[in-house]
Image (cartoon, rainbow, N blue to C red; front, side):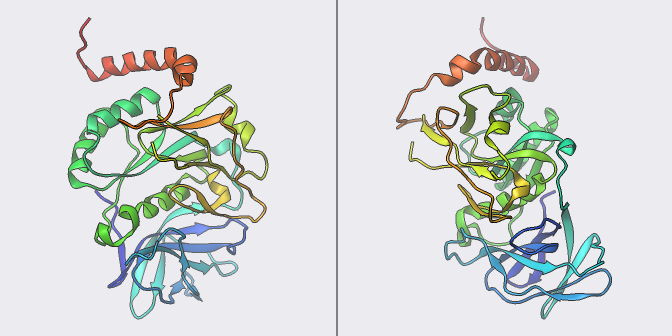
Length: 324
Protein backbone atom coordinates (compact mmCIF):
# COMPACT_ATOMS: atom_id res chain seq x y z
CA UNK A 1 0.00 0.00 0.00
CA UNK A 2 1.23 3.54 -0.70
CA UNK A 3 2.47 5.60 2.24
CA UNK A 4 -0.30 7.98 3.20
CA UNK A 5 -0.01 11.52 4.54
CA UNK A 6 -1.75 12.78 7.66
CA UNK A 7 -4.00 15.81 7.15
CA UNK A 8 -2.96 18.57 9.56
CA UNK A 9 -5.11 21.25 7.91
CA UNK A 10 -6.89 21.42 4.56
CA UNK A 11 -3.60 22.55 2.96
CA UNK A 12 -0.95 21.01 5.23
CA UNK A 13 -0.02 17.33 5.18
CA UNK A 14 2.52 15.31 7.20
CA UNK A 15 4.36 12.25 5.89
CA UNK A 16 5.65 11.45 9.38
CA UNK A 17 7.74 12.61 12.32
CA UNK A 18 11.45 12.00 12.99
CA UNK A 19 12.90 11.85 16.49
CA UNK A 20 16.31 13.43 15.86
CA UNK A 21 18.68 13.32 18.83
CA UNK A 22 21.80 14.49 16.93
CA UNK A 23 23.72 17.49 18.21
CA UNK A 24 23.97 20.25 15.66
CA UNK A 25 23.09 23.68 14.35
CA UNK A 26 19.36 22.93 14.20
CA UNK A 27 18.87 22.33 17.94
CA UNK A 28 18.81 18.93 19.62
CA UNK A 29 17.03 16.78 20.39
CA UNK A 30 14.02 17.57 18.20
CA UNK A 31 10.99 15.95 16.70
CA UNK A 32 10.94 17.01 13.06
CA UNK A 33 7.64 16.62 11.20
CA UNK A 34 8.05 16.36 7.41
CA UNK A 35 5.32 18.50 5.84
CA UNK A 36 3.90 19.32 2.43
CA UNK A 37 2.15 22.67 2.84
CA UNK A 38 0.66 25.55 0.86
CA UNK A 39 0.87 28.24 3.51
CA UNK A 40 3.25 28.40 6.45
CA UNK A 41 1.79 28.80 9.91
CA UNK A 42 2.81 28.04 13.47
CA UNK A 43 2.15 24.65 15.02
CA UNK A 44 2.61 23.08 18.42
CA UNK A 45 3.66 19.54 19.34
CA UNK A 46 2.15 17.64 22.24
CA UNK A 47 4.26 14.79 23.61
CA UNK A 48 3.35 11.60 25.45
CA UNK A 49 3.71 13.24 28.89
CA UNK A 50 1.29 15.98 27.91
CA UNK A 51 4.00 18.61 27.45
CA UNK A 52 3.17 21.11 24.69
CA UNK A 53 5.99 22.78 22.76
CA UNK A 54 5.83 25.63 20.25
CA UNK A 55 7.37 24.57 16.93
CA UNK A 56 8.19 28.15 15.89
CA UNK A 57 8.52 29.14 12.26
CA UNK A 58 8.51 26.25 9.79
CA UNK A 59 11.89 25.42 8.21
CA UNK A 60 11.50 25.77 4.43
CA UNK A 61 13.49 23.43 2.20
CA UNK A 62 15.74 25.22 -0.28
CA UNK A 63 14.24 23.74 -3.45
CA UNK A 64 10.57 24.70 -3.24
CA UNK A 65 11.08 27.27 -6.03
CA UNK A 66 7.99 29.37 -5.22
CA UNK A 67 5.56 26.62 -6.21
CA UNK A 68 2.05 26.53 -4.74
CA UNK A 69 3.06 23.73 -2.36
CA UNK A 70 6.43 23.31 -0.70
CA UNK A 71 8.25 20.90 1.61
CA UNK A 72 8.96 21.95 5.21
CA UNK A 73 10.13 20.73 8.59
CA UNK A 74 8.18 21.51 11.75
CA UNK A 75 10.90 21.39 14.45
CA UNK A 76 9.70 20.80 18.01
CA UNK A 77 12.41 20.64 20.72
CA UNK A 78 12.00 17.60 22.95
CA UNK A 79 11.60 18.60 26.63
CA UNK A 80 14.14 17.28 29.15
CA UNK A 81 13.36 13.75 30.37
CA UNK A 82 10.63 13.37 27.75
CA UNK A 83 10.22 9.90 26.21
CA UNK A 84 9.14 10.21 22.59
CA UNK A 85 6.45 7.67 21.81
CA UNK A 86 5.21 6.15 18.58
CA UNK A 87 3.25 9.28 17.69
CA UNK A 88 3.32 13.02 18.31
CA UNK A 89 0.28 15.29 18.36
CA UNK A 90 0.50 18.29 16.01
CA UNK A 91 -1.80 21.12 17.04
CA UNK A 92 -3.09 24.34 15.49
CA UNK A 93 -6.79 25.02 14.94
CA UNK A 94 -6.96 21.25 14.35
CA UNK A 95 -5.32 18.35 16.18
CA UNK A 96 -3.66 15.51 14.26
CA UNK A 97 -1.67 12.52 15.48
CA UNK A 98 1.44 11.91 13.36
CA UNK A 99 3.43 8.64 13.51
CA UNK A 100 7.12 8.75 14.45
CA UNK A 101 8.68 6.93 11.49
CA UNK A 102 12.42 7.23 12.26
CA UNK A 103 14.54 7.49 15.40
CA UNK A 104 18.01 9.04 14.94
CA UNK A 105 20.37 8.50 17.88
CA UNK A 106 22.99 10.96 19.17
CA UNK A 107 25.86 8.86 17.86
CA UNK A 108 25.84 6.37 15.03
CA UNK A 109 27.92 3.28 15.74
CA UNK A 110 29.82 2.16 12.64
CA UNK A 111 29.57 -1.54 13.45
CA UNK A 112 25.78 -1.35 13.37
CA UNK A 113 25.47 -0.38 9.69
CA UNK A 114 23.47 -2.91 7.71
CA UNK A 115 24.64 -1.56 4.34
CA UNK A 116 27.82 0.07 3.08
CA UNK A 117 26.14 1.98 0.24
CA UNK A 118 22.47 2.64 -0.44
CA UNK A 119 21.20 4.28 -3.64
CA UNK A 120 18.00 6.33 -3.54
CA UNK A 121 15.97 6.72 -6.71
CA UNK A 122 13.44 9.53 -6.10
CA UNK A 123 10.92 9.23 -7.90
CA UNK A 124 10.34 6.79 -10.72
CA UNK A 125 7.56 8.15 -12.90
CA UNK A 126 6.55 8.08 -16.55
CA UNK A 127 7.08 5.25 -19.05
CA UNK A 128 10.74 5.44 -20.10
CA UNK A 129 11.73 2.21 -18.31
CA UNK A 130 9.72 -0.98 -17.90
CA UNK A 131 9.41 -2.77 -14.56
CA UNK A 132 11.42 -5.68 -15.97
CA UNK A 133 14.24 -3.36 -17.08
CA UNK A 134 14.48 -1.76 -13.65
CA UNK A 135 14.69 -5.06 -11.82
CA UNK A 136 17.28 -6.41 -14.26
CA UNK A 137 19.53 -3.42 -13.57
CA UNK A 138 19.15 -3.75 -9.80
CA UNK A 139 19.91 -7.46 -9.86
CA UNK A 140 22.93 -7.05 -12.13
CA UNK A 141 24.54 -4.37 -9.96
CA UNK A 142 23.39 -6.03 -6.71
CA UNK A 143 22.21 -2.67 -5.49
CA UNK A 144 20.94 -2.02 -1.99
CA UNK A 145 18.45 0.73 -2.65
CA UNK A 146 15.19 2.43 -1.83
CA UNK A 147 12.89 3.10 -4.79
CA UNK A 148 10.10 5.67 -4.68
CA UNK A 149 7.25 5.17 -7.15
CA UNK A 150 4.53 7.56 -8.25
CA UNK A 151 2.68 6.58 -11.42
CA UNK A 152 -0.06 4.00 -10.58
CA UNK A 153 0.68 1.85 -13.65
CA UNK A 154 4.42 1.95 -12.94
CA UNK A 155 3.74 0.99 -9.32
CA UNK A 156 1.66 -2.04 -10.30
CA UNK A 157 4.04 -3.42 -12.92
CA UNK A 158 7.17 -2.77 -10.89
CA UNK A 159 5.64 -4.26 -7.74
CA UNK A 160 4.97 -7.49 -9.64
CA UNK A 161 8.62 -7.79 -10.64
CA UNK A 162 9.79 -6.82 -7.13
CA UNK A 163 7.75 -9.66 -5.64
CA UNK A 164 8.92 -12.13 -8.29
CA UNK A 165 12.60 -11.43 -7.68
CA UNK A 166 12.43 -10.79 -3.91
CA UNK A 167 13.62 -7.19 -4.06
CA UNK A 168 11.88 -5.62 -1.11
CA UNK A 169 13.01 -2.03 -0.65
CA UNK A 170 10.12 -0.29 -2.35
CA UNK A 171 8.28 2.80 -1.13
CA UNK A 172 5.12 4.05 -2.79
CA UNK A 173 4.18 7.61 -1.95
CA UNK A 174 0.78 8.99 -2.78
CA UNK A 175 1.28 12.75 -2.71
CA UNK A 176 -1.72 14.62 -1.32
CA UNK A 177 -1.43 17.44 -3.89
CA UNK A 178 -1.42 17.80 -7.69
CA UNK A 179 2.05 17.05 -9.10
CA UNK A 180 1.91 20.30 -11.09
CA UNK A 181 1.69 22.34 -7.88
CA UNK A 182 4.89 21.08 -6.26
CA UNK A 183 8.46 21.22 -7.57
CA UNK A 184 9.60 18.33 -9.77
CA UNK A 185 6.83 15.87 -8.88
CA UNK A 186 7.57 16.25 -5.15
CA UNK A 187 11.02 14.63 -5.37
CA UNK A 188 12.15 16.56 -2.30
CA UNK A 189 9.74 14.56 -0.13
CA UNK A 190 11.27 11.27 -1.29
CA UNK A 191 14.86 12.55 -0.97
CA UNK A 192 14.30 13.74 2.61
CA UNK A 193 12.55 10.52 3.59
CA UNK A 194 15.34 8.41 2.09
CA UNK A 195 18.07 10.51 3.75
CA UNK A 196 16.62 10.05 7.23
CA UNK A 197 15.69 6.42 6.56
CA UNK A 198 19.36 5.73 5.84
CA UNK A 199 20.74 7.21 9.07
CA UNK A 200 22.27 4.49 11.22
CA UNK A 201 21.39 1.91 8.56
CA UNK A 202 23.75 2.68 5.67
CA UNK A 203 27.30 4.07 5.92
CA UNK A 204 26.88 5.97 2.64
CA UNK A 205 23.77 7.08 0.73
CA UNK A 206 23.89 8.15 -2.93
CA UNK A 207 21.22 10.16 -4.74
CA UNK A 208 21.06 9.79 -8.50
CA UNK A 209 18.92 8.52 -11.37
CA UNK A 210 18.57 5.10 -12.91
CA UNK A 211 20.74 6.02 -15.91
CA UNK A 212 23.56 7.37 -13.72
CA UNK A 213 26.33 5.28 -12.23
CA UNK A 214 28.85 6.26 -9.55
CA UNK A 215 32.11 4.62 -10.62
CA UNK A 216 35.39 4.67 -8.66
CA UNK A 217 38.43 5.22 -10.87
CA UNK A 218 40.74 3.55 -8.35
CA UNK A 219 40.44 0.61 -5.94
CA UNK A 220 36.67 0.16 -5.61
CA UNK A 221 36.86 -1.39 -2.14
CA UNK A 222 38.26 1.67 -0.38
CA UNK A 223 37.36 4.75 -2.45
CA UNK A 224 34.48 6.14 -0.35
CA UNK A 225 36.10 5.35 3.00
CA UNK A 226 39.24 7.18 1.86
CA UNK A 227 37.35 10.22 0.58
CA UNK A 228 35.12 10.68 3.63
CA UNK A 229 37.61 11.98 6.15
CA UNK A 230 36.55 13.06 9.63
CA UNK A 231 34.47 16.17 8.75
CA UNK A 232 33.45 15.31 5.19
CA UNK A 233 29.65 15.07 5.01
CA UNK A 234 29.04 14.79 1.26
CA UNK A 235 30.86 14.75 -2.04
CA UNK A 236 29.55 15.76 -5.48
CA UNK A 237 31.39 13.42 -7.89
CA UNK A 238 32.83 14.79 -11.11
CA UNK A 239 30.34 14.37 -13.90
CA UNK A 240 30.78 12.64 -17.24
CA UNK A 241 28.06 12.84 -19.91
CA UNK A 242 27.70 9.62 -21.90
CA UNK A 243 24.15 15.11 -21.88
CA UNK A 244 23.41 18.76 -19.84
CA UNK A 245 25.83 18.84 -16.92
CA UNK A 246 24.56 18.46 -13.38
CA UNK A 247 25.78 16.96 -10.12
CA UNK A 248 24.46 14.41 -7.68
CA UNK A 249 25.75 13.45 -4.26
CA UNK A 250 26.96 10.63 -2.12
CA UNK A 251 26.68 11.45 1.59
CA UNK A 252 27.26 10.29 5.13
CA UNK A 253 23.55 10.58 6.03
CA UNK A 254 23.95 11.22 9.76
CA UNK A 255 26.02 14.35 8.95
CA UNK A 256 23.29 15.91 6.78
CA UNK A 257 20.28 17.98 7.84
CA UNK A 258 18.81 18.86 4.42
CA UNK A 259 19.55 17.22 1.07
CA UNK A 260 18.54 18.82 -2.23
CA UNK A 261 17.83 17.11 -5.52
CA UNK A 262 21.37 17.63 -6.85
CA UNK A 263 23.34 18.99 -3.89
CA UNK A 264 23.62 18.98 -0.11
CA UNK A 265 21.67 21.99 1.17
CA UNK A 266 22.63 21.96 4.86
CA UNK A 267 24.86 19.88 7.10
CA UNK A 268 24.03 19.20 10.76
CA UNK A 269 27.32 20.65 12.07
CA UNK A 270 28.79 23.89 10.74
CA UNK A 271 32.30 22.44 10.39
CA UNK A 272 31.20 19.59 8.13
CA UNK A 273 32.26 20.09 4.51
CA UNK A 274 31.41 18.98 0.96
CA UNK A 275 34.68 19.05 -1.02
CA UNK A 276 34.94 18.59 -4.77
CA UNK A 277 36.48 15.30 -5.86
CA UNK A 278 38.89 14.82 -8.75
CA UNK A 279 37.49 12.89 -11.70
CA UNK A 280 40.60 10.74 -11.50
CA UNK A 281 39.17 9.27 -8.28
CA UNK A 282 35.38 9.14 -8.61
CA UNK A 283 33.01 9.92 -11.48
CA UNK A 284 29.27 9.97 -12.03
CA UNK A 285 28.46 8.60 -15.47
CA UNK A 286 25.18 9.75 -17.04
CA UNK A 287 24.02 7.70 -20.00
CA UNK A 288 21.67 9.20 -22.58
CA UNK A 289 20.24 7.94 -25.86
CA UNK A 290 21.85 10.81 -27.80
CA UNK A 291 23.94 13.98 -27.48
CA UNK A 292 26.58 12.39 -25.28
CA UNK A 293 29.72 14.51 -24.99
CA UNK A 294 32.38 11.94 -24.11
CA UNK A 295 33.54 8.40 -24.61
CA UNK A 296 35.04 6.62 -21.63
CA UNK A 297 36.17 3.00 -21.33
CA UNK A 298 36.81 2.95 -17.56
CA UNK A 299 33.77 0.82 -16.73
CA UNK A 300 34.55 -1.72 -19.43
CA UNK A 301 38.23 -1.93 -18.56
CA UNK A 302 37.89 -2.08 -14.75
CA UNK A 303 34.54 -3.78 -14.27
CA UNK A 304 33.65 -5.41 -17.59
CA UNK A 305 34.40 -9.00 -16.58
CA UNK A 306 32.48 -8.71 -13.29
CA UNK A 307 29.46 -7.04 -14.91
CA UNK A 308 29.41 -9.59 -17.72
CA UNK A 309 29.26 -12.43 -15.22
CA UNK A 310 26.49 -10.71 -13.28
CA UNK A 311 24.62 -10.07 -16.52
CA UNK A 312 24.79 -13.77 -17.37
CA UNK A 313 23.57 -14.62 -13.86
CA UNK A 314 20.59 -12.26 -14.20
CA UNK A 315 19.68 -13.56 -17.66
CA UNK A 316 19.62 -17.10 -16.25
CA UNK A 317 17.72 -16.08 -13.13
CA UNK A 318 14.90 -14.29 -14.95
CA UNK A 319 14.67 -16.98 -17.62
CA UNK A 320 15.42 -14.70 -20.56
CA UNK A 321 16.11 -16.64 -23.76
CA UNK A 322 19.22 -15.60 -25.67
CA UNK A 323 20.37 -16.88 -29.04
CA UNK A 324 23.65 -18.85 -29.02
